[in-house]
Image 1 (cartoon, one colour):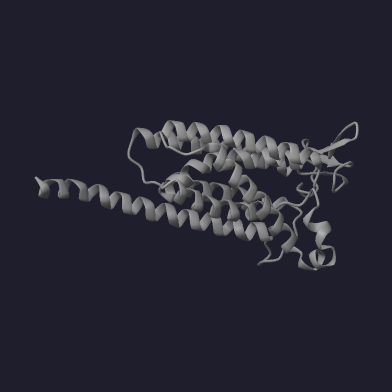
Image 2 (tube, rainbow, N blue to C red):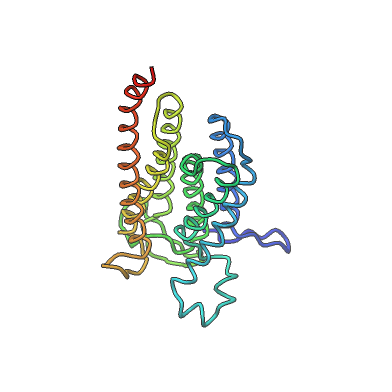
Length: 264
């Protein structure tokens, strides 16, 4: 593993480099989606503000998960180069998207649909940063042939463990491909706004819920880790949202011919 790259007096964290790569890839996906939907919004502004909000939220979520450690060494915990939680970034990123939707006078569900594929891909690339730096996001010990050890990681282990960042990367790429194609289908046939985002909540929640069974995160809520409990909420919320959107869409589709007939 390679937590840091030393270039003379300059030290670069590999996790930070992969995070920057994730934002860059997310920008290209976001720009392509805005272009194909012919939406007037600035992708540089969106990815910059959402990325910044996500970083702040990820760090705050992580430090507040262990309040005793935070109050013991607050500055060290806040300014540490490691320790970012996905669901913290999700919440603050979501709030920023709400503000940006209002700024661009764009329906919120449309903005969320545009952001969902970029978020899925960016998350997967960020997990490769966790793998390279060995920051403790790996899983429980395993005898499987692809098990890995992280003797030089930020959170070292000499045991062969599940490389869960790789699992999450593969799941994230698959989710990205599905969401991208779903967005393309929405341009060819009528679909309810928000379906891409709701699918994102369902699929990412399910993927994180499953992988947490073999992660080393401490259990706190009904035998689940904090991330697993939140991922379950994401899965349920996405399923409910998807059901509501489809139900309303089909009701409106049935009403349109009746309204057109009355108008004529």
